[in-house]
Image 1 (cartoon, rainbow, N blue to C red):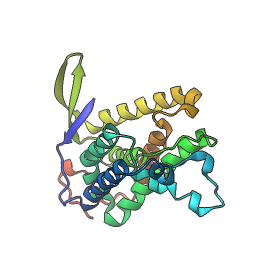
Image 2 (cartoon, rainbow, N blue to C red; image 1 turned 30 degrees about the vertical axis):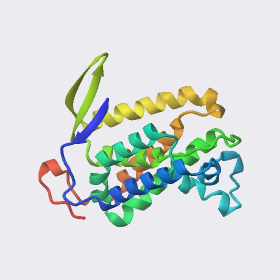
Image 3 (spheres, rainbow, N blue to C red; image 1 turned 90 degrees about the horizontal axis):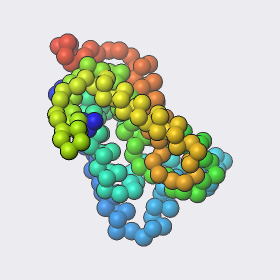
Image 4 (cartoon, rainbow, N blue to C red; image 1 turned 180 degrees about the vertical axis):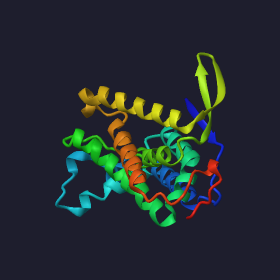
Length: 223
């Protein structure tokens, strides 16, 4: 299932979401024009992590703005563009960016704990974006999302509740993560970064003061 857009857009321009997307694109362009040591400098390499040295911990944040290829960055920014505006409006601009980054850090830590001795660079915004998805599931489970569903050589666009799409997404990440444990040292997709980030966003949204109601109920957004 590929979400295309949600039908309940935020009432305010999601400045931070757009800014995060722009920064990710700019860093990706710099990455493409830079030698390989650029990635090794800013990506998270588990074996180099020393919790007694702040310098080795900064990649838990900087790695969130690197991507492994065009499909990687396009998919991450696509999901962020669809789901980020409502979450930004609900959290407010002061909290949204820290929560986004914290989700990314927890996601990276989740993957790091699986293979702390790995020398394979970890990079991508997937954990942070997954945090946005987790929060969206809590805040807007009944929002309608226009979704492309492929059927072999054919496809169909249907409207589905956000809860269906996001729970389906999480289940796929979970089972893919469990299946990847045996080959965690070989590279590929950091499934546990997705799981950890999603769980972080979901948990933060769960404990966030419920000051606003769902848009579809016609209640005022007190942001």
